[in-house]
Length: 235
Image (cartoon, rainbow, N blue to C red; front, side, top):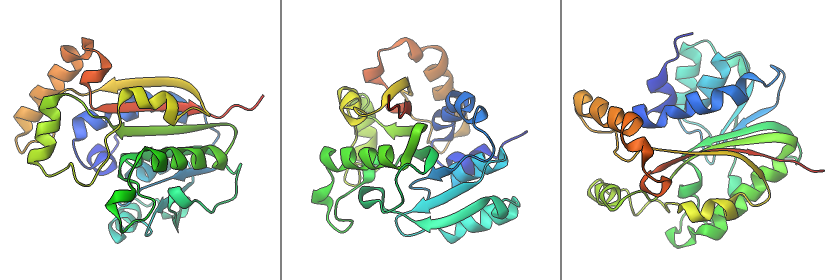
């Protein structure tokens, strides 16, 4: 199946699309009747991916997914597989122990206790959201999360130039064990020293090639994307 990768990932596509490669083994082992929750979906990209693979998905965002999400899903004839809902994962009010899989891309770093107050964006709020995901999962369920990490000084300057710093709290690699403390961390992968979000496709391809075939040997602290596979296990 040829996936509409640009629709699924939306931005910085070459780097962030690595989540498909990393997470496919987990998604493929899930029964088609699994209960799946996609958080922070906005334009519904991950919901598109999972629905194309035959899964039914609850597609959520704090203020409901956008009309673009619904239009894209309709265009791809996926609407029968999708339920739309409003969900603030910091103040989750869904039944606990309900889902086999929770999935999110670039969600945790933007969360606030009070959506109208930037000062309420901190590690404690991020940890609370991940704890809520844990509560929503059934025993044995998975949380697949792709998040923005701090990356190199060069990457941080790039974000400042693009005015990305004020609206986000970027995670440090040393924080991940604390963030997922309740979970069994099955796999944590790092990717991307150079962004692939320039206006030139040639530059983007060159950066991606360097990330995958040269810079991949650098320590994870140099990389700005984490791909996490975490599992809830209650013995």
